[in-house]
Amino acid sequence: MKRILSSTIQVFKQIKSDPMMFAACFTPFVMGALIKFGIPFLERITDFSLQAYYPIFDLLLSIMAPVLLCFAFAMITLEEIDDKVSRYFSITPLGKSGYLFTRLGVPSIISAVIAFIVLLLFSLEKLSIGMTICLALLGSLQAIIVSLMIITLSSNKLEGIPDSRGILRSLHCLRNLGYLKEIVILVSTATPKEYLNYLEERHYPYIVSGNDHVDYEKAFQILHEQYGCKYMRTDSGGGLTNKLLENGLIDEISLVISPCFVGNKEKQLFDNLLLSEKVNLELQGTENAEHGCLSLRYAVKNKD
Image (cartoon, rainbow, N blue to C red):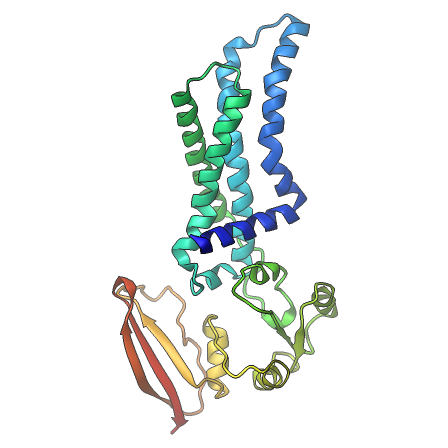
């Protein structure tokens, strides 16, 4: 529960930093006040009755709060997906289920409460408590559907661009997780100057190594000398893993075998691995994991 609360607070901090999304969180109360006091005022000055449309205005109030709040959470989630940050959560104490709950479950619960309050304060019809609760829950359910549609149908802004070109623009998502002491960016001499200025303005330390691409062996040596790093772990995809393995920079490989077939459409962990010689592995240990998975730990031995 503490991890979920911490992750939720970080999302609200990100929403607060964006004026548009921050304003969206208060819009239901502003619109509620306009409807509650504006509609009767218009009726008085125009002698035109809108009473037949009161249920529609109340329905709008029940939908507005959940949709706007879940929209803000969906935008944060999209930003995390674009920057490949969402993958990181699966190996943090929060886990995948906790991540999904904080991005979908938490906003739906909060939005249902807000919708209930908005209806109590600003509804034009005299709604019973039971009807108010039902409308708030239905509005919250609809908001979840809208959020899922936004996340599913929206395409990534960044895709397939090397990190040495300077694409990570939402590093605050990682810095705000609470699980990291500091973030050090590895760049090359080919990294745009504009991106280095971006890092300096936000006080992110970076290490320059390599020309067109990051020289990981040199970068790791600098990390050891300047930051005292003795152990390093990579949780990225096959591209970085292959590069480190090809350069003999991996001492141990941890694999998790999941009991399912994915076919040949999924990305392969060691796809396009270029090795001049075979690399031997020595089994160090096995462990039964959750959901029928098997965890294997191998030491990388010397090449033949």
